[in-house]
Amino acid sequence: MIGLGNPGPRYASNRHNVGFMFLDRYAQRAGCTSSFVRETNYELLECGNVKLVRPLTYMNVSGLAVKALVAKYGVSVDDIIVVYDDVDLPLGKIRIRQKGSAGGHNGLKSIIETLKTDQFIRIRIGIGPKPEGVDLAQFVLTDFSDQERVVLDKVLDVAVQAVQTILSEGVQKAMSLYNSVEVIT
Image (cartoon, rainbow, N blue to C red; front, side):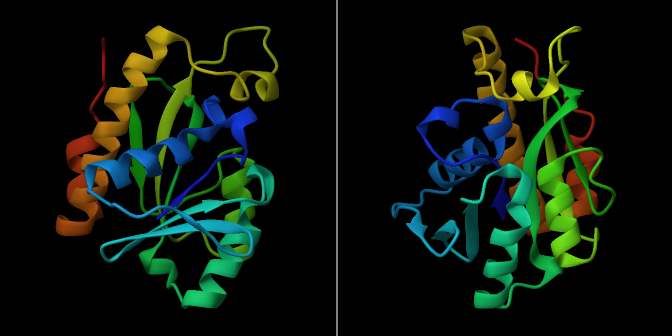
């Protein structure tokens, strides 16, 4: 499972780092007691039979880290789940898909180009909407407000449940259960 974000403390709480936040929440909920270990250009935490991966290449070139992961561990595209932020999805919602375009997300675009396929599971976590008149790059690199953080915490738990469903019952079941869920405070 690959969570997208940007490395370093400057970006830790940014909207664009929802993928990293998700991995931390997943590890916590799954009871993983070890820590992420740095590999070439990503961090890896083996949590049971699930590999949690944080690319350290910055968002727009996430595919480089995925390429290194696939080369080292022989990870099949069928076993990849990518979790990332989506500005076009409102905060409080997730969307699970089995395949599809990058939808304007440069991190996902980099992964699709590197793997030469869009046939992998992805979970989009809503961070929108972007306020009118605010630059997209500026918006995704801002932190969540305290009120938004309350919603995000609940959404991260829903996303963890969705992944557990994918792993145990399949992506179709997870899509039917979680694509219509909206977290409201």
